[in-house]
Image (cartoon, rainbow, N blue to C red; front, top):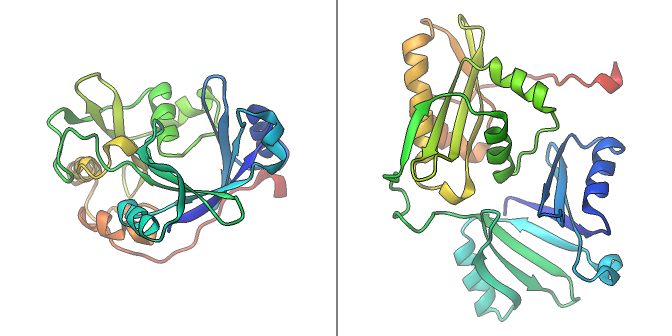
Length: 266
């Protein structure tokens, strides 16, 4: 298990997301559907989803839990063997996750989900022939679409997000040659002299486990090796589960401290 997210049934997804963002202070937000019928907010490790049931009368009793997991196929087989009440079988969802839903003995619904592992066109672990790695900056629209696919929603306006993109020294991206869609990226910021920072390394869930992230990071390494001065420091933030991934491009664990600017406390 990676983490659990409560799913609260609501009458108005957009109004609820806005309330949690503007009143309760959750900085990251996202919505899904047209018109929106699902959404969520997050603040560091706290994540909450909201959904509008097709039957509004079920809102008051519509709470459930969404669990992000690893090895979902093995877990699914365990639950089948133990005769769990699987109300929605394991299937690929349009938002990029493999997911199934279980009803527990109290009637509560528990969704188990994992980022989709492949597109079905290539074997796992094989870099797709229809993907190319290039150095170019994404547009604001491309950035928002990709970050939403991996569950990151920026609260920045388009103008502020464009300013952030303008300060990037280099962005290495993966493009789907069949339709030109941006399916992965990594950005490098820094002073161009002594310090560099790798940020927003992301691959669309439908394209993960295809070595796309590895090839993107190889592109970042090539650029740094060619452009960063000798003894320059390159940093990034990551969780423990990804340390082996970044070791491939010569990153190593380090200790330090951080400060986040909180204007409400100034």
